[in-house]
Amino acid sequence: MKRIRNLTADLANQTLSVTYADNELRTVPLYTLEAFRAISRLWIKTGWAVKYSYNFSWMGRPVIQLPEDLLMMQELIHKVQPQVIIETGLAHGGSSVFYASLMEALGGGRVISIDIEIRPHNRKAIEAHPLKKRITLFERSSTAPETIEEVRNLISPNEKVMVVLDSNHTKDHVRRELELYGPLVTSGSYIVAADGIMEDLTDVPGGKAEWTRDNPKAAVHEFLAVHREFELDSEPTRLGVTYWPDAFLRRK
Image 1 (cartoon, rainbow, N blue to C red):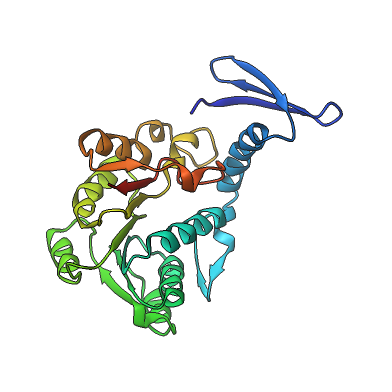
Image 2 (tube, rainbow, N blue to C red):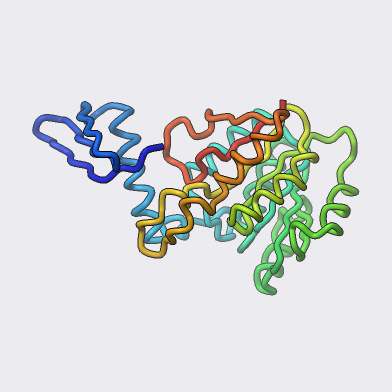
């Protein structure tokens, strides 16, 4: 995806002029999908800078996610109907509760949530939540051999498994998680690597130059190059309003 250097909206003439980093200039009708996607890229960057995703909760727990990504995950979970969702990185537990609520609505299933640190007040709130019956917590490294072994032992051979990677977002860590958790994903289901948008945030306040190459999206493409049993699914990011570009890997 080419970087955008400048956007100019002409409301009178209903056009949007987009200048890319390589100096290519495109002028498109303002009220079109192409213009919407270009404007959305700027909106996403601005939203990240002002912590837009920190303003939401799900059933009482803060959920630090772009609402559009959560809605797309709902679509995916309804389509796949997994019995187990493995989540690395749970923060306040909002995403754990979100996935558990979908399992509850679908009539079964559970969430395995793993984090290297679960703060006591977050653990207390999750364990007191009505949906705790569908959530198993692991406080340890997602890449530790004993973690993988315990998680594997919790899964029955006939269960459909989905994985969401949302812990440490460095390329090396995500790459390692993809290797470790990819084999647990069942055919037709997905492993999802969150926050590949980091690649596009290097010039945003708080962004880092090394994110150009050190990000989950880079890990995904390295993984796909050697794991032909997975394929990238662009349908969940079809509108371009996402923090999770190139995140959805479907097992064939």
